[in-house]
Image (cartoon, rainbow, N blue to C red; front, side, top):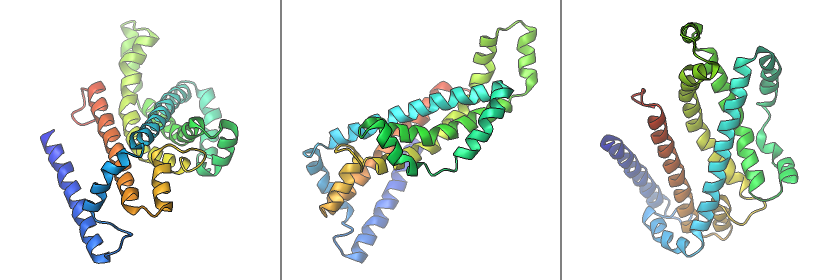
Length: 247
């Protein structure tokens, strides 16, 4: 843990140094120095920063949880029942290449301008990734693992709990780590439409007012939110997969 903290600290210092040098070379208000940006953070607290941060955190968390649950259930269904696989596989491969952001106007028409449309967009983008990962993880389980449990009279639920579900966990967490960054990017985009709360709205509002220190401070805070969620996901993975040295 100490080594990891040191690595994060070193990476942060390195990025801040690059930022400082770039700010000095440009010598423009378009890229304020890290010190200027940090000084702007207390002012953001007075401008409902935590309200915006809480709104974004709620949307990301809800969207990711729903996407993982839906992706897991569909992946399990497809891998377990060949008929469903023959139906869903072509459907997934045909619809996955569709740029989901192009569906935002439709989603907003059907889901409204509130949280629902933002969450739906995250679910639409993350679910297929989890689905494919879970399906592949289940299909790679050697059949003789199940044969051993059948011989000792284990029920279907016992086989699921001892073999199938644990085998899908690494795939679920690996996909969730990758999808988390995508979810934050999507949320930033969707929060520019039909809402006055969220870090995406906050950042773009500061940009339009040419309040660049506030804009960069909000970007930094959104990045830190992503880092906190990533670390939390990592800790959760280690908690539910104690058999893995590095989850």
